[in-house]
Length: 239
Image (tube, rainbow, N blue to C red):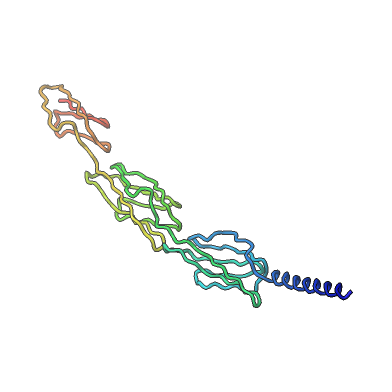
């Protein structure tokens, strides 16, 4: 009988210890769920805990936190630099605490899919994809070219070049503290007849001269005895 009582008391002690361990685990803090991944653009993300905490603090000013029951809400500023960064979040519950990091990646240098853009004398518009994390701006160095940003697309518009000069300019792309450049060129107008002299012998003589022209052209005679007609690729002289 005494042996039976000793065994019973031993089992009772084990049961009490087991119950105490279970209560300690229930009072502990663990991460149950993260609903988002930090990005360079910043914004809010939440972390759900296994139990309610008393307060939450962050060791970085760019990451502020608030606690509502079991949910920690972290608000991140945009990371405009190239380097990633980490904030340590600490949740306190009574004498216990739980710390976990939130790592935010760095920004990307805005990178155009083509760094050398060419227009002919007609000008016009071209759309160029730009890889980026944060919004970027685009500023051309010369007025003959305009630049607009449409999401992650750079829209370049060149005016018509009525000169025979070739133009070159730079467009600066800036995202936060990061920047890059692309080069934009535009060719000048070409107006090249296949011949520059012509002898006319008799009244009614007619000759057709091919013209290589980038843009539409006009032609006229400075003498009454010679008439000139033209289309988009040639001119006709009649004596």
